[in-house]
Image (cartoon, rainbow, N blue to C red; front, side, top):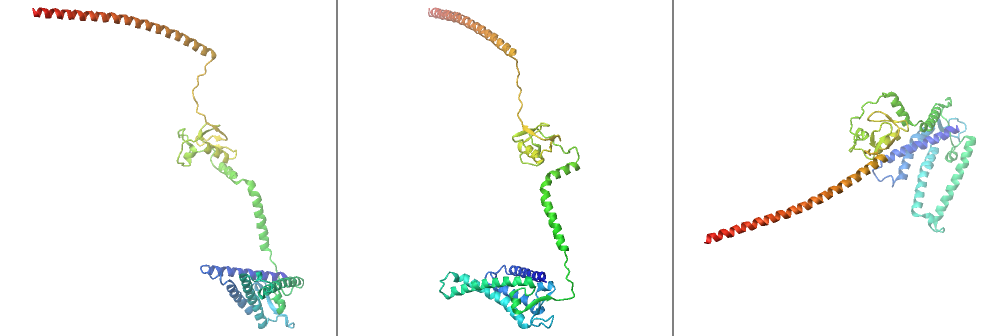
Length: 362
C-alpha cells in the first residue's frame, strides 16, 4: 500500500507536468505565460481536481494504482466515500491555498518585503511566512515518517481532513510484474557492455579487413597509364590540381605521389599496407623523391691523364700563337712594299699627264 500511494503521487505530478507543457506550447505565441502563470496553473489544477477527486473520489494516479479516498470519520463503513465538504476543503487547500501562497511569494519578492526595516508590518509578515514555511516542512517530514510506519495519510492534508487512500477493489490481487524491470536491466547491461567493448574493436580497421576479405585479391582499375607528374590519388579523388606536390615515392614500387596523399593513405591503414593505385603493390612506407642526374665517375689516373693532355694543349696553343705573330709581321712587310709600288705607279701616271698637256699646248 505504501508503494502504491507514493507511485500514485508521482503519477499525478507527471500528469500535471505533461499537461502544463502542452498548455505552454498552446500559448507560446502570446505573452500570457509570463504574466498569468499562477492563474493558468490554478485553472489546470481545478480541472484535474474536478474530473478526478470530485467526481471519482480518487486522483488519476490513484486510479491507476487501484486506490480511492475513504472517509475515516465513518469507521463503521469499510468503503465510506468522502463527503462533499471534505472534497471541497481538499480542493480549497490543494488548489486555492497553493495559488494564494504562490501569489504572495511573488508579491513579496517583487516589492522586496524582506529588505525593508524589521519594524515595518510588511517585513513582519514576510518573517512570519518564512517561519510558517519552516514549520510546514517540519510537519510534512514528521507526517511522512508516520506514514512509512503505519501506511495511512500520505500528506498533511489527508491527515487533517481524515481522508485515506484504500484499495478500490478488494478482490483484485496485488500482482507485481517485473517484466519491464527485467527488460530495463538487460538493456542497461547490454549498453554498458557495448560502451566497454566498442573502443577495443577499432571499427575502421575491422571494416577494412572485411572489405579486403570480400574484395578480389588483385586490384582493378589501376592508374598506371597516368604520367609521372600526375598524382594518382588526386586524380582518383577528382582534385582540381592533379600535379604532384612535394613529391614522395613509395619504397616498395617507387611510384611518385604527393606527400600528403601517400602518407595519409599509409597512416589510415595503420601499418597493414596500402595498395598502390598505379601497380597494386602493397605499400607500407614512403621516402622523399630526389631527381636523379648523370654524374661522371672518374678515377685518379684518368684525372692525371686529363691534366697532362691539358698541358700539351697549352704548349700547342703557345706555338700557334707564335706562328700567328710571325705571320702578322710578314703581312706588315708585304703591306709596306705594296704601298710603295702603288705610290710609284701614281707618280708615273702623273708624269705622263703633264707631258701630254705640254704637247697639246705646242
